[in-house]
Length: 87
Image (cartoon, rainbow, N blue to C red; front, side, top):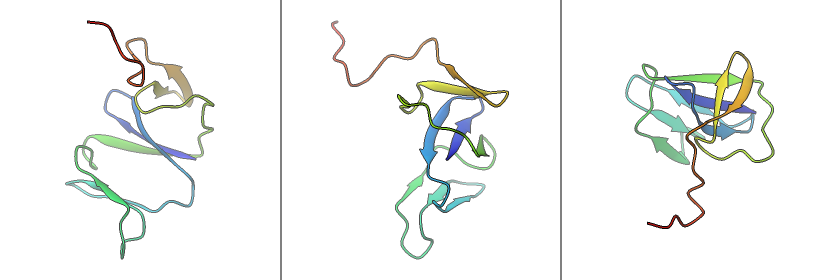
């Protein structure tokens, strides 16, 4: 697996090893260049890092984990967006 982390080490995306990624100065292209799956517009070569060879946590969800010193750490401020919060 591979993950893209932001400058604060937050794991934003997790991909299979064979998923093609093209990290540019403006954005990140995901998938076959001839037929992209999607473009990540808020991350690029200047504000993110691609880390390969990671093991996926069983309960991984975008922004739930930080990746620091070759290890996953639960983000202390993470709130599950799938659970409705009372106001």
